[in-house]
Image 1 (cartoon, rainbow, N blue to C red):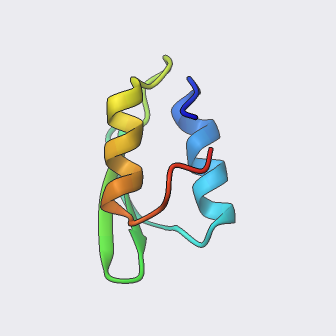
Image 2 (image 1 turned 60 degrees about the horizontal axis):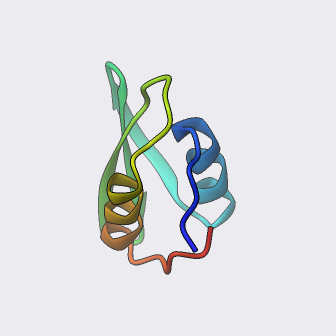
Image 3 (image 1 turned 60 degrees about the vertical axis):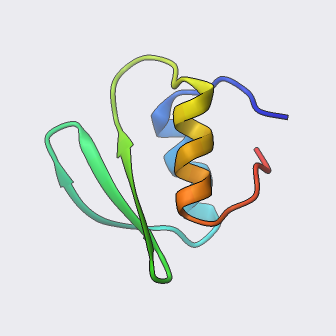
Length: 65
């Protein structure tokens, strides 16, 4: 089941699953897991569920959080 969380919390959980920060430009972080990439917006508010789901899908991670 999806839950609301801050981008920083999601980043911490993704890094625990082997996702690597490739680069950061402004308030957006580029993530990589294997040969898959995603961009994480690091704004100081709760992420929308659709954005979170899209990031997990792009990195080929099941919705486990």
